[in-house]
Amino acid sequence: MFLDKTKWLRSFMLFVTGFFLMAATPFHASFAKKRFYMEEGSRLYLKGSSNVNTFTCDCEDRFGAQTIETERKHGYVKFRNVELLLKTKKFDCKNRKIDTDLQKALRADQYPNIKVALLETKQNEKCLNGDCVGWFDVQAKANITITKTTKEVTIPAKAKKLGPNKLQLIGQKDLYMSSFGVDPPEAMFGMIKVNDLITFHFDLIITVDEVQ
Image (cartoon, rainbow, N blue to C red; front, side, top):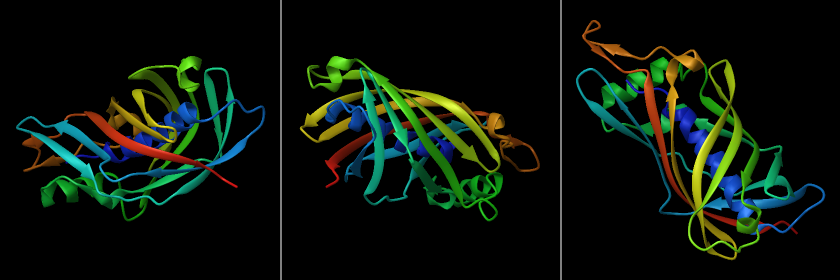
């Protein structure tokens, strides 16, 4: 009964990458290669509701280290060749019926992955240089593809440096399933209807290394 969670997961991964790179990378006049990791303790989940209850779906997908290309100019970081594939069947709503409805709505057999392509991030330039204490605001732009629909979205978040190469990123984003061509699931012959609006939440710990 929950479908847009997968797209949020992708957004979350894009966000994470962008934030961390921005906070830990010195100025570059051309694209530079970086490798990022999502550490244990990170969490990504979706919250939705129906006309009878609310539900939370955790993303259980795991991602290995990835090499990406970035270019920094003042408070902006642009990305190249950054595409993440999220497995539609890796969301656990702690209810088999909801899991099945979600996979059916997202046509998981035909479209096993949700694609997220990170475009750019924007933040205070001082924060990128490590001069901010505590949390700072970040905005990321990404292309998200669910089934056959691709949309550019802006995702707001907050980031905090935990060390020279480590960053924590938190945030949430409201999305409408119908905007991606997904019909909210129904059950019990239409007596139970999932609401179109869902909220994606993420709390991530990211490490970024230089690529030699």
